Length: 189
Image 1 (cartoon, rainbow, N blue to C red):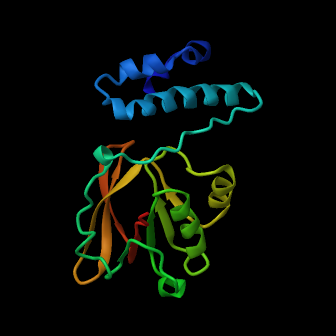
Image 2 (image 1 turned 180 degrees about the horizontal axis):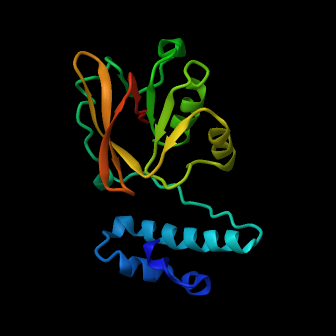
Image 3 (image 1 turned 30 degrees about the horizontal axis):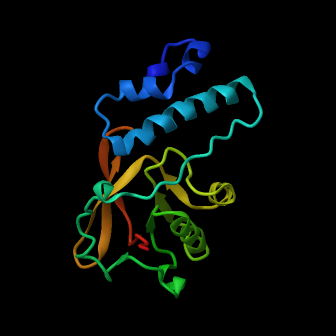
């Protein structure tokens, strides 16, 4: 966190979950887990820097609550024209296409991995700071051709007749940018 900038390592290690929550003054209660993850990640990074064993931090998998859901513009407009909300049986439909997969859990990331058998242009967007999912899934993603875009969210799907591009919000830089894609996959339960 930016709280630790300029601090000695030992002082930064003492930053608690409470300290982070206070620094992020005004977080809604539903987002308090973010301050916990930040404090835990900082400690794990310092442990890693110090060379300690077992510095892996288990991140809590949390489903989105209704209050966290947001509307993505263009989804309904391009449904069946490049936007998919369920798995497509014949993945050859995506051969050599630019495919954007939104992280909605392990199933979506496994699907992104499957898609690499048909196209080398698979991008997965996640709000997480690192590759989410189980340890084995994270390893597979890191070793694959799936390009991960972290700390980001899909804002809008755009095009004329079919999907042509998307607008992404980068949380870390607090910037929006456009990305040219042919398909957007948002798997729903």
